Amino acid sequence: EAGVAQSPRYKIIEKRQSVAFWCNPISGHATLYWYQQILGQGPKLLIQFQNNGVVDDSQLPKDRFSAERLKGVDSTLKIQPAKLEDSAVYLCASSEGGPSYNEQFFGPGTRLTVL
Amino acid sequence: GNSVTQMEGPVTLSEEAFLTINCTYTATGYPSLFWYVQYPGEGLQLLLKATKADDKGSNKGFEATYRKETTSFHLEKGSVQVSDSAVYFCALSHPTSGSRLTFGEGTQLTVNP
Picture 1 (spheres, rainbow over the protein chains, first blue to last red):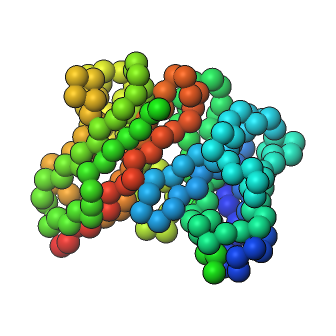
Picture 2: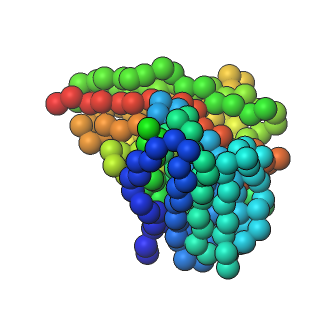
């Protein structure tokens, strides 16, 4: 069974530029998560989708970050414009879904460097 | 709010040494507790979990016991190997937060031959 796929694996941009990340979850997984992992810290949830609807985006900086999950499968996370403090690894995870915890499977992440 | 605190790292051990990584949590009620591992260049993987007090999670020689009285979930292994070198994250999920995971800061473990 294929795991969670993410691309690109690495991205370097200048501050104030825009960037987008892509995630393809495990087939059949209804729930998709985006986490931000700053160096030396644990992952922090940015947004959670259940199918193509947003369940939790309380920690998403909505002035510059946006995410969508069209058709309830793939998802993109965008940052516009990027700031230096956005340098981090962006992790995508998916799970079978439901209101209670189901094991989350993580992709390899996209490492973003903002110069 | 919910939070997880891990012992500060990094931790460096010799092969076959005993490992303990401390984890304590703050949450109301009965959260579920997890240990995730991140090997170099790879994504996070679930190592073990416990969903109620006094449960012991175990996998690959690692184990952790859910201690409600001390709000702890310490990770232990009796004899570490070089291949255990990785970053270990303690995490919790709470019934009121659905399936959201709250992670600790992570502990870098290096095992030398």
